[in-house]
Amino acid sequence: MAGAVGGFFLAQGTIANRKNESTAALSQAEDTLKTLRQYGYINSITPELFSQMEALTGAEDKEFGYESARQNVRKYEQAKKSQLPVT
Image (cartoon, rainbow, N blue to C red):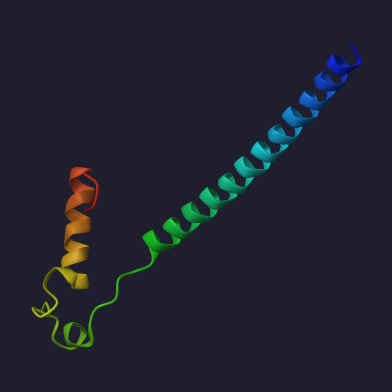
């Protein structure tokens, strides 16, 4: 009988410890998600930079092709108009 009572309390302690560990892990994951969302917001409002050649000439720098800021802004504006995700 004493073994059963001792086992019961031991199991309850193990369950409580696991629950506390899970709660702490969930809290940490929620904080990480909040931080990542803040960084995503900051990146979404940060303007893209043009290369020095693009800034001087106003023309797209063909060497960078789809990596140019002008092309990325164009894709973003088209996606915003059509409400499609930016790729």
